[in-house]
Amino acid sequence: MTEQTSTPVQETTSGRLIYGCMGLGGTWSDEPHDITDVETAAEAVEAAMDVGVTLFDHADIYRNGKSETVFGEVLAATPGLRERIQLQTKCGIRLNERGLETYYDLSSDAIIERVNGSLERLRTDYVDILLLHRPDPLMDPAEVAAAVGKLMAEGKVRALGVSNMSAAQIEFLQDSLETPVVANQLELSLLKRDWLESTVLVNHPGAADYSFPHGTLEYCARQGIALQAYGALARGHYTGNPPERPTLAESATAHLLSDMARERGTTREAVLLGWLMKHPAGIAPVIGTANPDRIRACAGAARVAQTMTREEWYRLWVTARGSNIP
Image 1 (cartoon, rainbow, N blue to C red):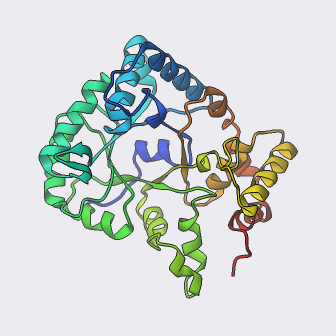
Image 2 (image 1 turned 30 degrees about the horizontal axis):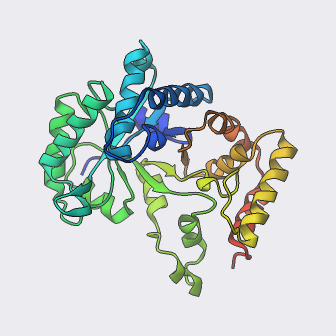
């Protein structure tokens, strides 16, 4: 098993904003993108860099590959941009193939094939981080290690991470790898709170309501595995895209975020992300919106994380859950 040490990738990722490119590239159809999709991507990239983002998150399946394609066109049209940023992409999910709507494939051949496809679409020679998108029950860790080793030897992948994996799954995989797992991307937010509820509901009847694998955050912290949070803006529930019939807790949380933002002279997005970044695990929120204004609204998140009090942090959590903690 490879000993975990801090790497430049981990240091760049931990506690920093990441831009998630799933919203780029137009529709999820097989139809090709158009010029407006490239313009949208360019505006989103510019806005993300304005708020200090240097890591851009992709997956081979996003918009059926069009997210990577339009991003590649932005890179090609902007000399020097590739050297100023880091790219990560994911593989392991197959959509609408062989008569199945979805299945997972972390076989050696599939990993190599999908990475080469991503590099071609992104118009780059390498990705800084490759994430294994979902746990594959048929995964052979030795096969994964062989594929990753080949890609790294060829200079096509510089670091390996995972997504949606528990501590036990990462440890099982790591035993066969010659390179450390540097990141784990999970859905973490004030709306999706399983990761947090599981820490305080140990030995409590309410624990059965949450499926998050207890101990995963602690394992990642001990091993130096950077935590990336997708869905960090809570899908807009509290910041401009509320559900048609919000619950009392959702309405109260939106009002509290507005009050806290007004008191600080910042935005609700910054407070929402700052709450996540306040956690000592060094969570790096992934911003998924393609709206440049909403991207720029995230600018003050790190400052909010530094100034938010313990009482304010707990007040947001308790308000969002709609009841007191045990």
